[in-house]
Length: 269
Image 1: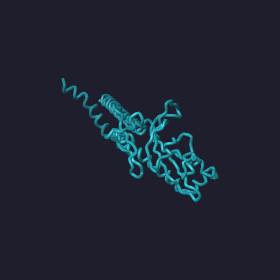
Image 2: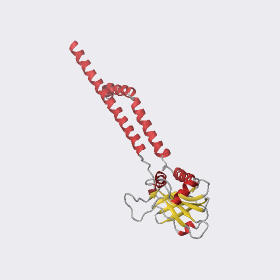
Image 3: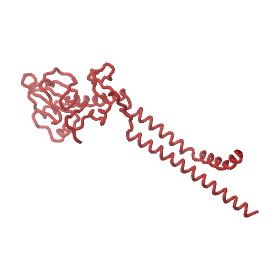
Image 4: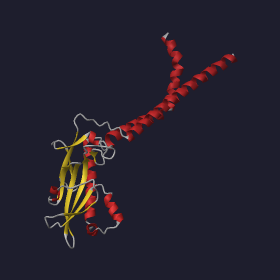
């Protein structure tokens, strides 16, 4: 009885095997796409691990530092900003910079005069401008920043410039324009935080000075389902459906062919 059942389904099994070999490239492609999505999710995305988050935050901050240092080497531009004689395109470039830029004249006196600032998103406290030249990590009401102070010697006077490089924004009231998060890294605040723990990951300036640390929040897991991962896994499912559909078509075609062949055989004999 069992043997007759095996004999009955043997043509179908054979047809499925043939279809599997014929369209195997589809299931292999689906498997590769899913594997690639796993690699993208767990190794390529900046938020896949604390080490990568540390690298990306430090990399972005160092780029801002490089841009700030490039601006302050242009003493002609600094002088023009103080005298309000700079051309509009150059001013607009400074307005678009991803950090606050301040110029204080009368650096040699105790009465420091704010003569230029590029944005109202940033501000300095009196104790900020009393610091010595250097880089500092500080917390303001609207977030955490790297403050850079540098004295510039001009022909007629000494001035000092201050850069307020955003690290993380914090707003008491949020809306679609004011969102509490790490600057340039959407939703990272859901999983990471600035920390003083000894086990946290250190963020350093371009000169190697320790600024602050970050760590993964407790009981927080980042699934990392970014748009790239979703796209690749969707493609994998599509190729899997193509494979199933191709096998079903081949099996149905094989069955129909068998039926036609049997009918011809009967009519012929």
